[in-house]
Image (cartoon, rainbow, N blue to C red; front, side, top):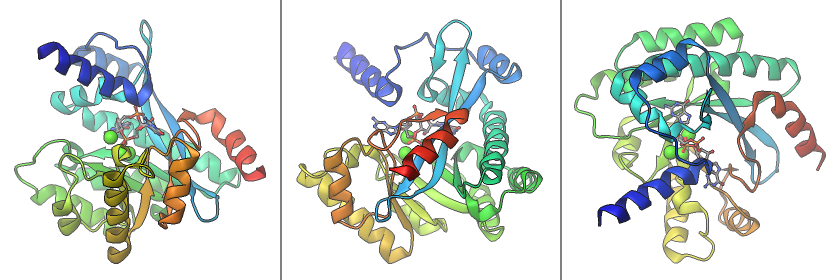
Length: 278
Ligand code: C2E
Ligand code: CA
Ligand code: CA
Ligand code: CA
């Protein structure tokens, strides 16, 4: 039983990136990586299903490890959350995302920039000041910035997190509920947080055309998004059958390997030009 659980969690972790599993890391190693600039953002395009246009990118962090090569976030985000390094990590990712967004805007690409934010980031109002200041310094309009919120565990006291999100929203930043339908990304969150976007978890998306349960969950999520005035994004669109199904049920936006894998920042302009041309 033990072995079965282990192999299940291993395949779930490698599913995101397909990397072999490195040894678990320590807080000290991650702190050093942050200090030495070993974390870098990859970007995955987000496209409109109706028009086919590229509308934005999502920043996805990778650790360029001197010994292990590229390490995927499932191997260090939980550590960052538990060890209190997530605040610094999110700041590094966000600052880098703002620099890239500015470059792309200057290059004529009007893209939204999505950044993943952990609920653990939302325990201080100082987070609002940081986000506002970084966006202003890079001259990126808040409405072009989408904060994707994932709740990985049950939070005890939601007062400050809710206040932080409400203040960001008042400043015109956009909020997205990530991994909708899994874990704690639930209807309670939709009730309590003024979201602009709903991301349907990829476990419901790939294969939805052939699976009645997934199909029902996708349709219901899109219907919910529409009634609440939110954009619906399907993540994990892996093949043309997924795409056609989402098109048929009126999903707004899509992300996934069928469109593009996450790529280094310097590949984004060329990818966008190629995509626009086809
Ligand atoms: P997520 O936010 O749900 O991001 C989507 C994940 O699915 C990414 O994995 C992406 O590479 C992968 N993916 C995209 N398209 C497909 C597809 O078609 N099929 C499959 N099987 N996978 C696809 P990645 O980059 O390994 O990130 C894993 C998770 O780590 C993210 O899930 C997010 O929760 C977290 N994460 C990534 N970057 C950050 C960050 O900067 N801060 C925080 N707090 N969390 C992050
Ligand atoms: Ca996300
Ligand atoms: Ca997600
Ligand atoms: Ca996720």
